Image (tube, rainbow, N blue to C red; front, top):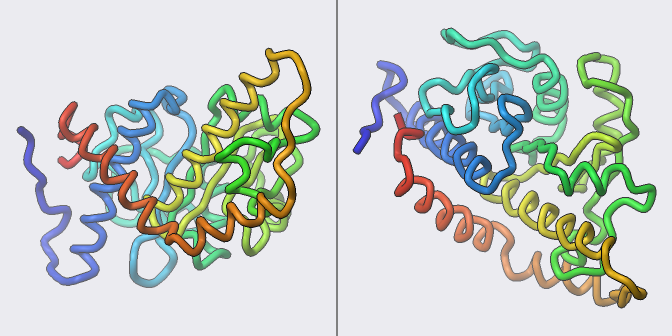
Length: 257
């Protein structure tokens, strides 16, 4: 059984919170890998750490998701500079996308980006996400769309990316590319990603079935969103995330190192 080790010699609430976020984020990478949402060394899950400068944690470029640990996560600033020390580089494409959102959306504590087959399929379809399934209805009015501009490595794309996400959307379909979700916590961003991924899987399955779809009325879609908000998205998200965190901890607790 592996044990967690301190990340720095300083004490205090900020360090304790960063340590907690590191363990949760590393665990989230393991969850993505367990669910088949990883893309070898590509894609990113980031979380903003407390304190000045909008610093955030990102995966080391070159490591698979099942190799990410609390201690090897890289802390960078919004200019892409490493804060502290790291033997690993950071993927420029990940920095461009995530730094833009972390520095502009205060509620975007966590940002997730994936290239799952189903997410990419939805991103290519002109109609985007079909809101006629259980999980898709819960995302009604919360999904933005961003036009594909090639590999995301240019600073000048940041304003357009932010405009596409908007101030209230929690999901951004990146056309011909993949999907991005945000949340006020790692668990909340994960819950948004889970719902989108499940909706995309259902939509992909429907493509191979004959006959018309049963439409979910606009009023019912709005009610699904309202019920989710009133029920407490954070509590549901935390419960689900903790359940999966226990799963990956039993499989391999090394992410806590």
